[in-house]
Length: 196
Image (cartoon, rainbow, N blue to C red; front, side, top):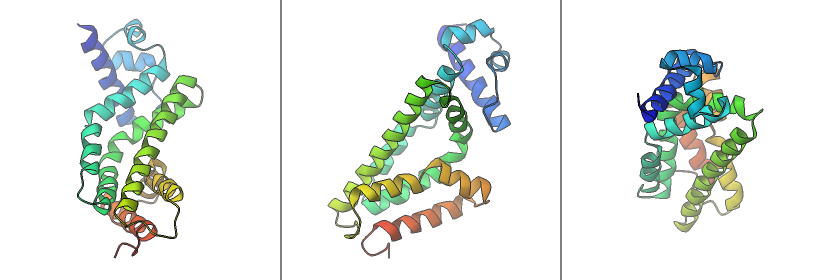
């Protein structure tokens, strides 16, 4: 088996275990067994569990075509349409990434490299929110009574995975309700005519 194939099998096995369990409580030994490789093979590719979880998050992003999805959001004809597309993307894809994000979140609390990776991802998402708010402002759609930095912070927070988790997983909202209500809330809070 090639190194690339074994690494991919390890990542796919970890993803399947985490998705099946719905949380991060998987060991390197369990992942090795599911991938049909030795524990030593797992450690050949990943220094530790944190390293594997960070690689898994990147693997999931690649599998779901995140770069292409973000490009579609950025290519929307208007800033309002981009905002709606951003929320729709989350409603559609958050269920697929939630377990992995939860796994990385748990690991980052005890691993500096995982924490740096987590913060980098949060910063990248914040930058995307800032760009969307700047586009709203350029198009004359941003409310005049809100500072662009505050608007970006609100967009970042309201569209966070934690907000999705609270509303969909804890409160039982459907993806459709999440998409509809969050889009309306953001348009009302951020756009000059309240999204009408």
